[in-house]
Image (cartoon, rainbow, N blue to C red):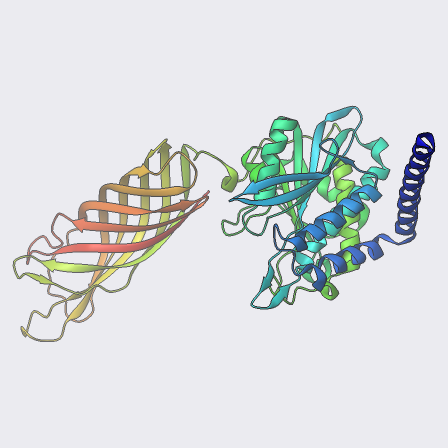
Length: 492
């Protein structure tokens, strides 16, 4: 009896395995019978369907998308990156999220890697409305499945291995890609990752004017390579040397900050971005098909030995500030005239300046010097009659403020506060009504201070000035006091 039971169990287990194998074969055959464009549409419509309720990070609905991706990975013949499972779970702020990660092994350089990633989460449901996120980022999630399918079929051509990653929790802080960057650092070493490509919002090819690749200068001869592959596909691309926006970030961020070359790939923003109207029927599936084919070939090229990093990185991704920085600056503000003997201060008018700004950075300290063309205007009291109407006094100058800075740290971005002095050479002045004939001191100077915030290339600061010497050389004592300026600078 016991032998009989064991025999039946063996038969049942074998039948179950055969059934799973047959089912997988049927699914693979069905998938191969479809065109790539049809498969892409199928994926996007599923990810953006009401049943997934916007795929909020870490939710049961996002888990449905995650499991769907796992099935597609199996269908494409991909291997799990970590033994036994495609799932790479992680916790953030006490909540659990999951990346879905697979690998296609290369050949002669199989211990070096290319990472292709796209986030599969979106915004979920807000105020009863589903945010389907068809372009953001069902389009990218669909694309990397098809890119993986093609690269898996061409694995004999690949020299480097290719990691395919579907990220969770991008929308709430790039958590999935940040975790995976650390995970891969421990697993394979980031020195062995030669490129990380983020595929984020690639579903509006025709209306977006083509495909944009940001970060091309992180690759040696990157423009030539991207252009050559684009010509083979007859696809329109736009390349940008680096990611420059300080207001946006994608899943390249954590890798780029660890000095991995990165490409942020997108067809651009549109009016439906982060709105309930970002639906599957607005996706350009023919364009998405072109993008997927192009990126598959670009990834295959990147897997070859001739593909090399350039050693260059975007300013926004650099850790420490450069020792020397220079750029353009402009400001608006106002300045009051002070007459100490009369205990009188007048109202300021609109002042403005433009010029260049330079910085020397030494860890938590720095030196800032500006050279500005400046126009300053303030109210000037009536001289005769005593209670007559006031007029405006204006002067044009070349002004050089210099500050000793205390910075919040050594990084490229952060807060700062400074103290120093300034010198102004006044080359022109005027009164709006009657000129009293006083001689304006052409050499003016005093104390200067500032505070503000630097984020990558952008500097926003408030600056203040107190004049110490006299405005006029041969008449009533007066000074340009408490000048305040809101200043914006862009450092290259």
